[in-house]
Image (cartoon, rainbow, N blue to C red; front, side, top):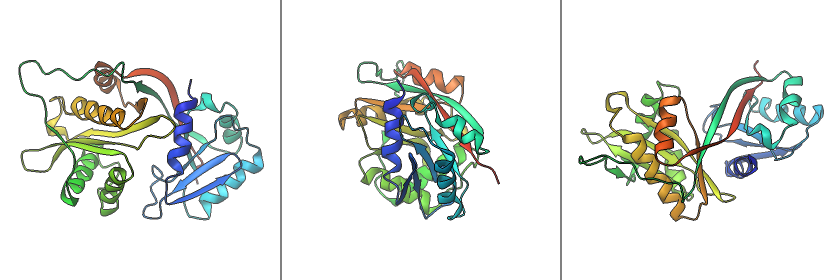
Length: 253
């Protein structure tokens, strides 16, 4: 059940500027940032790593001055978590993920009022506005930056999509991005709305638009993770359904 999402995780990391494959793991690195949310690894589906395999993966991170960290669907590689724990890794978080297909996608309803107008960025100013809005939406978990703006642009250039709702000042009220499809599916991530614009249907509108866009580009499904019951209800109303879980695990200094 989790194999398509885990196979996607492997394919998506192979798109990183620097890729290291060792002992049944794929690690993807971006030299423009030290963020552990960008630089991480994932196992191949069904991987059964030895202690030496895990040590080799840790070395790939340490020699770059990065925290060894993985994201993966544990049910697609059941032997991996125990091997990592034996090497001292600890779980950061465990999230459920939801999946939408063309058969379940339901456009959001806004009654008699017009819904949010979803746009695609048309230049660097728009990409920068989306990056800044998402940084604010996620309470500064990551800082907006020229590198973040460039990553959003690359998402579009590599076959994915970025969508946002413009704020009255011409910036961004909320937005999100979806990767290019791989192995039949695509990941929709970073759905965020600036606090002052929440409760207006922006997240649902952006998510539905991105999902439909990726279906139009050949994806058979789109998946995402949610951060709480409120966001889960938003996604379920537009056709996302629970399917599996993802594990975040790291080796602390």
